[in-house]
Length: 291
Image 1 (cartoon, rainbow, N blue to C red):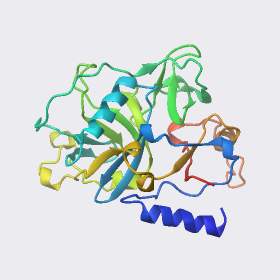
Image 2 (tube, rainbow, N blue to C red):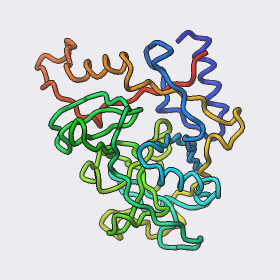
Image 3 (cartoon, rainbow, N blue to C red):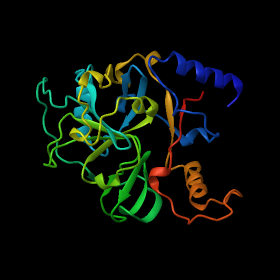
Image 4 (tube, helix red, strand yellow):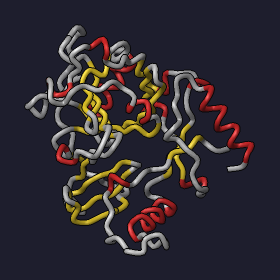
């Protein structure tokens, strides 16, 4: 990126209300066709006093969950609520918690498994600890039971999922974001339907609870981090959106990056690591849109 474009990038991030661009950094050049802009209809902005986190939704993964959360955002359901349960290196959970002051919403059926059909699956690893195969689909880290079997989203850092009770089909409005080492034991037990693509530093600044007390629910909810608003990008004027693009995970550039991470041929590695790759250690690059 030349200096003029770098200045434009800095200006866009600085002028976008509440946006923290710490995870939307400059990346090496790739062919323009290998980048895809975020869809405003499936992009959420979660805003706190610390800034804005940008969340991509995946209706192809969990259509009922995405539809409900989009409606909740349009109803301003989350505005003024808090991150009421936050456990370091696990999850940051938000919603009503135990207050139940708002009208109930429909419970949702579990949507953990999905058949990919014609969607391209970019392989990463076979015989992963939690799946026979792992790979990427449309920017999401996935596990797959077999080449023609169901796939499921992995609980990698930044994943957005629906909290629930013991009944698998009891999710309604309680959401959580993975804020630490991937809790992959939750794969297929919870519905993942989005992921934070920029602004995880905002999520990392929320107040923590004590995991040994009330499972991380903050005892003094006045100290819990307030959510100013959760809004769909499509519902904002273009000038208030962040024009981000994501590197396509079915592109040649992304495949090259996977190979580099798996094989570790750099001179630094005088003892060569095994040629294996944990899918949750693979970042999907995001950048501000190029002209």
